[in-house]
Length: 193
Image (cartoon, rainbow, N blue to C red; front, top):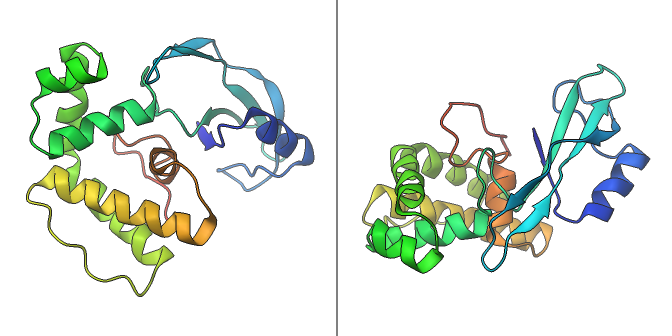
């Protein structure tokens, strides 16, 4: 899996031009059909997603190109999951959050459990990104909980990325900076700055 821009036309143009690199060998990727169709549950209505597949011209390995508005193995858009994480860090319970975001209680509880278990890893990862993007950054203020500290680091890293690379939605940056693995249940390495 490879996280790319959510702009389908931009991704197609980049594939044709050979501008997307294989994460394995660095060769250029070419179009190679599509992955299976699915509906992504967004803030308002579900929207269809049929991720593009790409094949490396050098090593022959294939990759699924996921847009930066989703996370790996999650049916909900990263913005929905992100808003749930923010509410949890502010002290809202999972049942109330489930009602606000319109998702099953079990789903929201799973997101929060995974985020809390990985909070220190998330905080450390985004602190490294923030420092790489802004070496003069002041120390991050503690947020009062592991999840709050992780969200603070995400916000600071996303802001540094926006200032350096241009405006882009915060949760899309979070997805890109973790290669879609923010709530992954494996220890797959996230991309380094």
